[in-house]
Length: 354
Image (cartoon, rainbow, N blue to C red; front, side, top):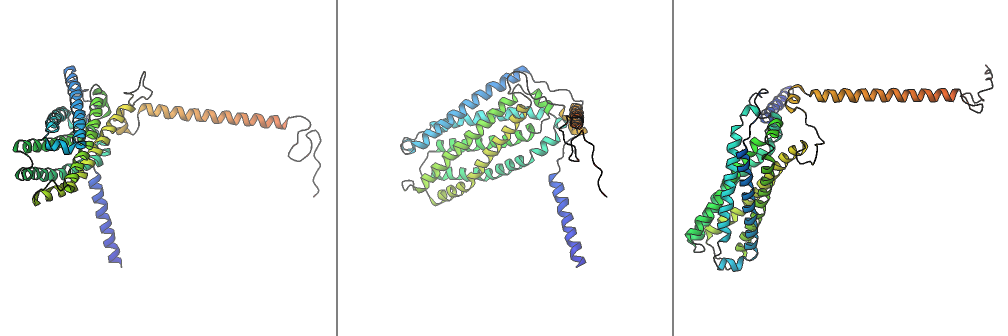
C-alpha cells in the first residue's frame, strides 16, 4: 500500500513539473535602459498606404467571391476568371503587408519584449501554430485536387497554376501572420506607445482581413459541397477523395481566422486602454508598466493606495464623531426623552429590589 502511494506521489510530482515546464515563458532579460523606438515618418506613410490598398483589394475580393458563389452555374460555363485574378492581387498585397510588418518587428530586439504579455498570448499563439500546420496538409490536398481537375478536363493548365498560386499565397500570408502576432502581442507598453502612429491601424486591417478570409472560406466550402452533390460535375475518384478530405480540414481555416481576429482585437484593446481611440484628453492614465512587473506596483499605484487609505480613515473618524454627537444629544435631550431604565430623564431611577 505504501509503495502504491509513493508511486502516485511520484507520478503527481512528474505531472507538476511537466505543467511547470510547458507554462514557463523564456525571454531575454528585459532592458529597462533601452532607448525608445524611433519610427521614421516615411515608414509610417508607407504602412498607411499599403494598409489602405490591401484592405481595399481584400474587400473587393470578398465581393467578387460572393458574386461568383451566387451565380456559379452561369459563370463556370463562361470560364469566368475574374475571381482568380482579383485573388492574385489581394493575396500578393497581403503577403507584402504582412512581410513588411514582420521585417519591422524583427528590428525590435528580444530584450525589449514583455514576458507577461508573451505569457498571456501563449494560448492564442499555440492555436495559430496548430492551425497553420494543419493548413499545410490542406495546401497539399488542394493542390493535388487542382491538378487532377486539370487532368479530368474541367480547368485549363493556366487556371490550375493561378489556383495553386492563390492557395499557396493565402497559406504564406497565414504563416507570416503567425510570426507577426507572436511578436506584436509581446511588445511592452512603452514600445506600443512609440508605435501608435501605425500599429493600431494595422490591427484594424488585420482584423478586417481575418474576417474577409473567414467569409471567403465559407464561399469555398459552399462551392465544394455543391460540386460534390451536382451530377453534372463528373470528377475522377482521386479528385473526389481529395475534395472530401479537404472539406474535413476547412475548420482549421475558420479557427485560424477567428483566433487571429481575436489577437488583433487584443492589440486594439491595449491601445484603447492607453486612451488612443478617445476624443479629447485621455480618461485613463497608463502607469509605468515595466516598473510594475519588476517591483509589483508603480509609485503612482502606491500613492493612489495611500490616498485611498487616508480617505477611508478620515471617513471613519467623521462617522464616529457624528455617532458620538448624536449619542450626547440623546442623553441630554428633552424631558420626554426615555432613558434605558424606562423612566423620564428628569426623574431619578428607583432602586431595584434585591
